[in-house]
Image 1: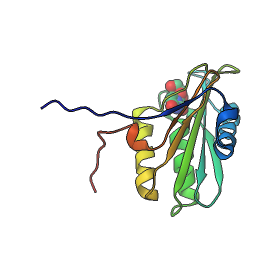
Image 2: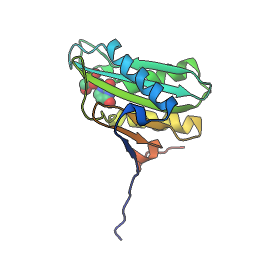
Image 3: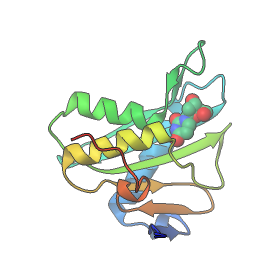
Image 4: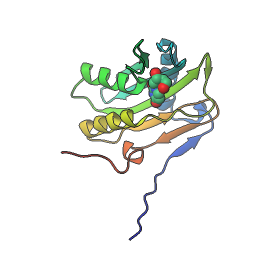
Length: 156
Ligand code: THU
């Protein structure tokens, strides 16, 4: 039997059309790109999370001379958030990236390893994590991590 999985997401033309709290979070992700340490890839990624206690935390990708050792912005911010507030749910995660000084034209989609950790975060919090992918020409909003990984690993 053939089966099909469909996912839904929203597309916005600019940051001004996002709800205020999401626009703020995306601005934090954009500002985090300037804190990236990416001398090898020259791809500066920023991520920001909004937590259920109202805290907003941001982080960036950090590379190493032993490239590809290093960590993506998304995992950096999620591990940081859970180190600081282990029992608090993540409500939303925003991502942005720059090549050089310029915001990418199209959204940067998280890698597989980051999506898994985003799913872990969602399961820990017990409610959907909204994912906001920012870029110069459009913004994509995915309302649950399940839409990024419909065939997810689950060992619980
Ligand atoms: N990177 C991220 O930080 N997040 C992503 O979603 C994609 C990739 C980083 C890893 C590496 O430092 C650089 O971008 C190039 O792959």
